[in-house]
Image (cartoon, rainbow over all chains, first blue to last red; front, side):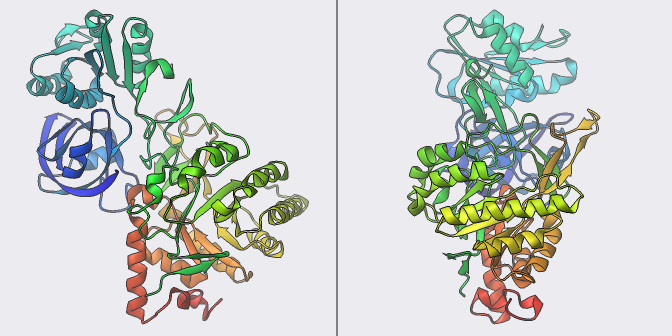
Amino acid sequence: MIFELEGFVANKVKVMEGVYYLSIESPSISSVAYPGQFVLIRVSPSLDPLLRRPFSIAGVKDGCVEVLFSVVGRGTELLSRVKIGDVLSLRGPLGKGFPAPSFELLLVGGGMGVAPLLFAHQRYGGKIVFGVKDKVYKGLCDWIRDNVGDGLSLFSEDGSIGERGTALDGALSLACSDAEVWVCGPDAMLYEAFRVLSGKVKRLLGSFESRMACGIGGCYGCSIRTKGGMKRVCYDGPVFDLREVF
Amino acid sequence: MDVSCEVGGLKLKSPLIISSGVWPFDPDLWRSPYTHGVGAICTKGLTLHPRDGNPGIRIWEVRGGLLNSIGLENPGVGGFVREYLPKLKDRDVPLIVNLWAGSLEELKPSMEILRDFESDIDAIELNVSCPNVGEKDHILRERLSELSSIFSCARRLWSGPLWVKLSPMSPQVISEALIAQEEGINAVVLANTWLGMAIDVNREKPVFERVTAGLSGPAIFPLTLRLVWEVKERVSIDVIGCGGISSWEDAVSMFLAGASAVEIGTITFLEIDAPAKILSGIGSYLKGKGYAYLKEIIGKAKGGRV
C-alpha cells in the first residue's frame, strides 16, 4: 500500500551546518515501512518545485518517519526551513528495501548514505562503519554516535575523526566471510564496494540513488542498467544485490 | 452533477485520463483508491520490440516544468500482453494502449499482436512523433502522406476506439488532425511534450545525452490550450487536451476551448490524487454555474457547442 498523506513535523534537529534531521508524523507509513525504503516529500505547497524529493527512511519511532538530509539544492534548502508543527506531505513507503538479514550484518555508509543504515540498525542491529572526508563532519559523526551507541566504527580520510581511511577500508577490516554487507552511498562507492568485497562476503547489497519523478515505477526516469536488464531504482530497488548490477 | 463524458468512442465516468508515461503497470494502482477521479489510464508507450531507453540523465526539473529523455523504455508489445495485461484484467478503469507508430513497418506487427487482445483493451492511442521536419514543403507533404498511411493501416487493423497523439512541434498540426479525421480516427490528442533542453552549468555541458528533451508540466499549458483551440476550429472529431493541466481551472479551460476530455500526467508526480482533486473542482464549477452536465461547457468559449 502506498500512502500520500500529510503529517506534522514532530521534531527537527540541525545536526551540523547543512545537515538536518526531521521526524514527521505518519503512522500509516511508519507502521509498514522497512529499512531501505524511502519517501517522497513535497517541499513546497505551490507547484514550484514541481517534483517531490526522495529521502531514505532513517528510522521510525512513535508513529513518525525520520529522515536525515543535507542541503544540496532548492528542494532540500526549502525543506531545511520547515519548523516543528509545520505540515508536510509524504508519499510512501516506496521501493523494495533490504530483505531481513540471513548472516552477520555489517552496515557500511559514506556521507549521507548513512541514513538508511540507521533504520537498518534500529531494526536488525549489526555493526555500522561510517566514513567521512574530514573533521567538518564532526557534528554528524557525534549525532550518529549518540543515536547508534555501540557498534559504530568511524573513519575519516584525513584521520581527524576515528580511524584514518574510508568506510570501505573499515568494511574490509571488519567483514568476515560469513558477513552480510549492506552499503549505502554514491554510485562510485557502491562500485568500489563491489570491487573489494564481492568475493569476500556471503551477501552484498547496495542502496542506489537516482533522480526521480514518480517514485512508483511509472515514469522510468530513474532506471539503471543491471545484468538482468534495465531496473527502476524507485520500484525494483533502491536496494539491489551489487553482484547483479556491476 | 454529471461529469461523465463520451470521447473518441469511449464512455468515461470522468473526463480525466492519465497520460502515457506516468502510471506504472502495477495492478494495485489500477484500482481504488488510486483511481478516484480517473476516467481512463494510458499505458507507458509501447514499441514492437522491448527498448532500454536512453542512457544518461533522464529527468531534469525546470521552472514550471519537467524535461524528460526517457527514450521509450518499455517491455515491447509482446512483453506487455504476456506479462502485464493479464494482471490488469481486474481493474477499475478503462485501459488505453499508447502505441509507438513511428513507421508503418513497426506499426503493422504491433497492431496484429494487440488485435488478439481487443477485448482486454479499451482504446489505442497512436504516438506519432514528429521527426525533425525539414523546411521544404515537399518534406512536409511527405510527412502528411506517411501519417495518412499509418492512420489508415491502424484503422484497418483496429475496429475499436482509435486515437492519435500528435506532436506540438509540427508546423502543420491542423493538417495532421484533418488527415486523422479523414482516415476514421476517433480522437486526436493534443499534444505530446514540447522540445526543450537544459545545460548543466557545473559540467558546462548539455544535461541530456541526446541534448534535447521533452518538456511537460504547467509551463506548457497555454501552448497546448492554443493548439486545442485552433485544431478544434477545423475538425469535427473529438479533441483531447494534453499538456500541463495541473488544476481544475486548467481542465475547465480545455473544455471551454473545445476539448472533450483531458489527459493529465506530470501533476501526478506531485499529487497522486490530482485526478480526484481536479474532478471535484470541475464538479463544483459546474454546480456553481448551474450546469447539470459537463458536455454543456465543451467549446463554450467559442460561443457554442463545437
